[in-house]
Image (cartoon, rainbow, N blue to C red; front, side, top):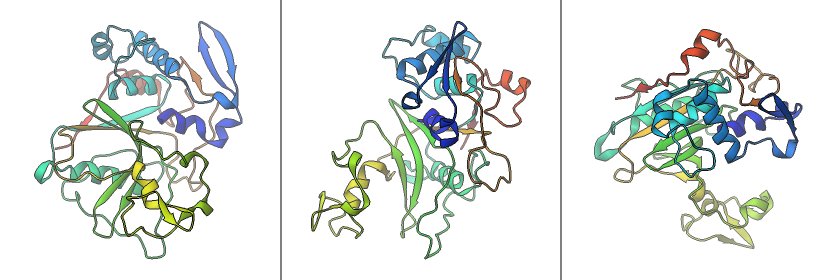
Length: 289
């Protein structure tokens, strides 16, 4: 999903996406912009061959193509950085709140999506774990062009695409999760088929009446409420940065050149010099306590 963001912007569609392997350039059509699983596996092995994350490469015997091996945050780092995309990782090794809660992680996600487009993922201040500003009454939804976040915990990963602040000041993560069931109507839905009213049954049924579908029910597949006692003990967040200029008023990704797999795209991270790119071969993270 992280690469889907990079290649999915309309600006990127104006160029071919190329797969570079053994000096053979194969142009890819607009319908196949998003890399396949096999292509992502090849990108990870390409990164390992070029010195990225030697420890992780050794643990997986330098082989993932054609296998069902689980990959995690460090493999995502290697794939993205080897493409020339700057990354940052936050480690949450233990709950930061009572009853196994993770207010520090929620604050990091909240601050990330509320910050300017060019601002990277960063650890929250220790005294700012639950300082969630309420939106103005006339601005219920704030749209952002920031990249999604990769969230990893034991045995599973999710893509965080936003955050929802409830009137109770509780938070829901908005996410894509491959393990969740989606209503069969979602791929073909249009606004006129969805009820705008809040369901009194809290989304327990798909039908809202009058032939409309209940928006609250449909959104359940994209919401994650990290209640105390229902969280994992450890999480990792990975964010990508460098796609925007500081102070850019366009609120959108800068123009970029052709994205090529199995090579470093020097145009993808603003201000990232060769020395920093070389340093990115060693995975680094910020531990949040």
